[in-house]
Image (cartoon, helix red, strand yellow):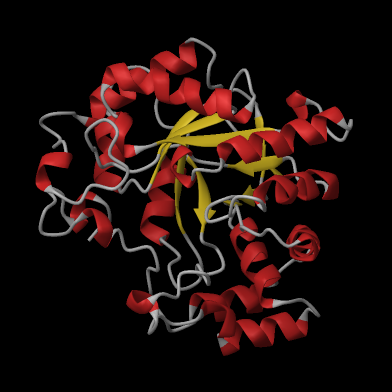
Length: 316
């Protein structure tokens, strides 16, 4: 499998297993199956509320001799209620304890949004901190300390736009090594991708299949990426499925990709995307796909009770 490389030479397998929305009772087996199939990259987050089961899956796989700790790359993320300097270390330690690990390979600031301690999803103004209360630079200082302490080998961010990245890049010390954002042919994020490449920041694509499990009332009219005719024709051409084409598209851009699945057959199918090479004609068709849509719009953080606006999340 292709790897991406950090500045110090450490490698990140370009394809990983995502665990967002993987339910209790399912994700432990999914992680085990993924490692058994050959995955060496697992993406987690505290807010997914399943890190204990993810950790059990990793532990099971290591106990059965499928993988050694040094052979698996594990990412987790700092939730919005732990952005104060004094809260970062305890949040990271909890993830390590839940995952049964001594260190993380990569730790990310999940969103550039700050809640008060213990708030899962803020609904009222008093549950939020502002940038004046808790500057992103304060959070990033604490993240750097955790890297220096060896609790995380690499540190980065998720859902950061260019303006927020520039804020961190202007600081002394470690720069963000990763930016994980929603990315697929409906949202190729070209300006952000170019900015990150210019600043030697690696990228990971989440929701690479268009978040097909987010089909509640609010999303019932969203375009369906997996049903797009351009993608279907490319999949047919390569005797592949649409999901494999979407995963291969991210890999063709040297962007890590973390499709989520708890189905053993689909986990194996997704891994076979590493054998699919899209040609220049395919990439031109995908660049001209004609649909633009962000599935995870962040509106749950920018409502009337929030001090944050959409331009705190996305480039205009």
